[in-house]
Length: 319
Image (cartoon, rainbow, N blue to C red; front, side, top):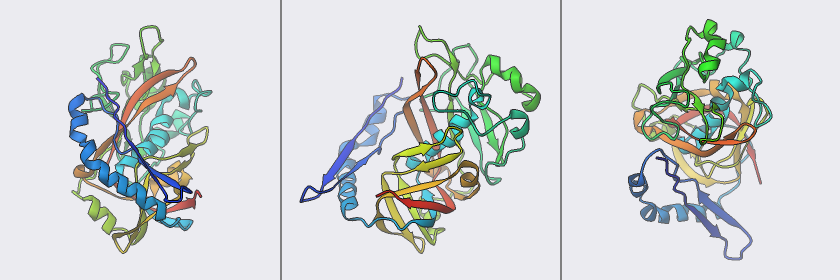
């Protein structure tokens, strides 16, 4: 079972010349209606409305280098586009290209066990067993039992997402000859092919809270919620916005900003990661309609992550 609650709140200036929205505050999940009840949408709506109104008067961001604290409600989409899609083996080998491009993580023999994607504490796993995940299942569409496996281990890229057919293509480089269970067809009449599992960034071993991560930031921006985004055809150059932006001064939230987007190149971006939160900051975001293939098929997939601090990221003003 999957569920996709949503809410969008818009504030309009008194003279009608401007409007700002607060959306993307709830995420799809592989759960039931108890998940919706637990979100307490009505109780939280007032606070979200106040944030939408605050955006009307917020100053625009000063472009340049900033430290960036990404809340999981924002970071999950960056993970989806810059880690999830480029580690699909069919993209890396060029079998999937027309719909959303190929991958910079290739050829397999040159990147598996060699490509440095981040600091040593950076861990990513593909996981078709994660509780609440939209891509969680018991078996894939080739009958392969669901499992979890490392994609990035100790900051190094180590494996792709595979089906039965694909596993043999790279087994000499990974030492793994079984499928990771990534075969999926959207319905009975659709041909199953390699689709993204839940791809998640593991929290840090230290129990750092959101406040702890913000306190480690002298001058930065906290980004919450997903916004607009742009990625090139190899998932190498990236740009992401958000919903709410808070300027951080001397380790504390100072004021709201607007018109913020961060840009970079995927390897450099992830290698700028400096601090990650503990398990208590872990949050599972999701894409309910991830399209791929021709004819197009739609999959749902989740991405978990802790709050994270990146250093010296290029920020642009989108106004």
